[in-house]
Image 1 (cartoon, rainbow, N blue to C red):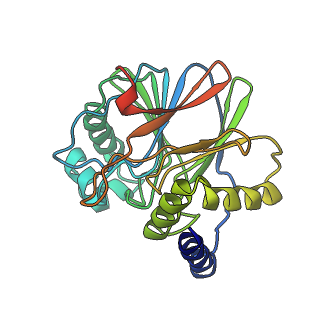
Image 2: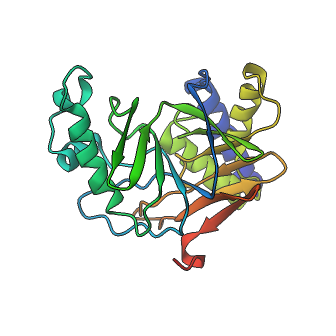
Image 3: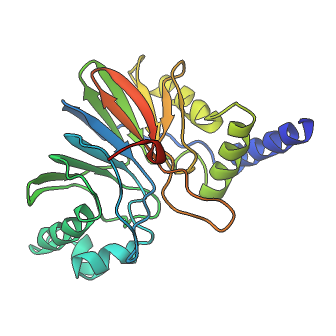
Length: 254
């Protein structure tokens, strides 16, 4: 036990001093209503299976939708230059084509899709909105605040907290020690000092380790990518009727 604690302590020090817990201003405040799902780290590729979720009015993708940026170029049939240049009129048509394929990977289609970029996503894929079939698609920035009924939620992928491998290792070990969301708690404390918000939930991804803390009001959506030594813990966060739940996919009937 003490060995594990020592390892966690070293990893935390390494994370804090090698990658400062970055804080940026909230880029958007969005008020929405209805049942909302937060999901992250899907890492879509050309061989991805259906993403099994339950019915919801709103779907918020909290980063790392794609395995690598090139995947979206394939989905949209567009070059990087076409997709990142906002002066090119067909940019939105290409992005719309790409998200039409993205929606096809979900077993349930939402009325509204809100996309927050992660570190594995194309850096140009933000600041857009359009209707894709029957879904309104909104490309947002890195840190977004949502008002859902009486709940305020700050959503961010998590790559401002720590690098992926460090985040994964610390989150995995601390969860096994029954002390989950350690880095998320450190980051939220910094947010509290910077933001003019005194009562909000923080929802992130990035670590691929799902967890929820009702006292601290923090949740991690988990991840959908399998690794050689660790199978994905597929989960998502559901906000409905002023309640927040972390649901594991193997326990959800779609």
